[in-house]
Length: 504
Image 1 (cartoon, rainbow, N blue to C red):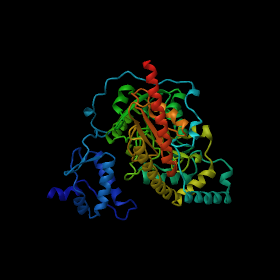
Image 2: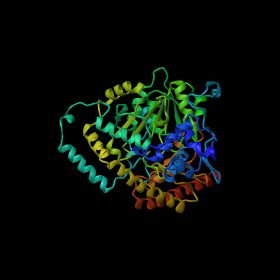
Image 3: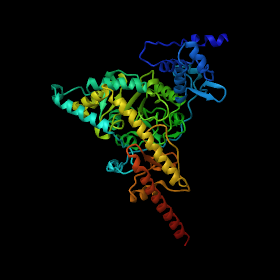
Image 4: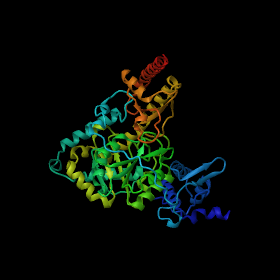
């Protein structure tokens, strides 16, 4: 009984009731720090939520919230009927005893991808196709539209001198402060406004990162399967791209180290891997940070669509765990609001800030101050947070509508699960159906689907359809699935006919 009563004091947990930080988050941050520093060892059983709430004189809901966040991010695991335990598979701390580090895996033959002709990289007309179920689409409701009109009109009415000259290539201080406040609160990013650089979106931020990578080494890791435009931008810049396989825990860091231990950077989507949707496990996150710190490598965290999580609170960023300033954090407002906005951001480590800003200046001089003024006002006045809350509900409904329609009409041909986060889902094909053949048949029936098999480089491809649900009104989804069913029927008949011809 004594050990239970001394538990909170032993690990110096305390809450500051006057703080603006919610109690559950104070507890979460302190417990996370104790886990990462090994003051709480792997396998340690945590006290019950009732017990800890009683010890700290806080509501049980605050402790439950902290425990749920730790569980969602992989710091803890639950055992039915037993309690909550510190995850046993977390690696040693980044600054751990070097004698206890595992020997590096033996190098494996690299499957580096080399440059192709630039014109063969991407169909630039594909992204503008508005038909279901194309990716990257967003919706805005009447409330957001009216607010945007009012704020835009107000900005033009008050057209001051700042809009008629050159400005900071990083972006206006008003918008950088708004983004900084948002990232600290919503994504647990460690930053100050001086570190934030406003970009035209994720693609420009990645392009700048590529330009400022050390000339000594242009070897990089990318996820396999992964986001094709990131890979294509790297190849166009002459980088040597090493595809690293993705499994149920995210990118396989051990395979990356074995394939290209001296790579200068890794490009990852840890919160919602594209396209599979898996979350990078906590053990892999810490392993990746340790490798980057040891090798002076950069981790480029693409945190696309992080706002849209449908089960529990958003997961904390990888950057928020980084004690060595090795993570370049990239995000975008183009998916949170609308693609035509063309505003994104990057949080740059201090050591890389000067060359990054210089490259941004040489590339594009500065972002539009008029657009920034509207966005800054939208965020400062609380409209952005309200918009995200409304869109999260809307997109969840559209996700559920798509999942239900697929299960009802295409259950024999496709296997699908509702993702907890993001703006797309993955439907795996059955009965040997080809995702590329379905793509071609879908176009003939007015449906856009992306074959996942094309997103692989070296890993064995899986046949699946990548379907966007965020930008397509709910009432259009079921009819589009009917057309997709017709496309699959046509593809199946064609396959049968080809087999019959082959037997003759």
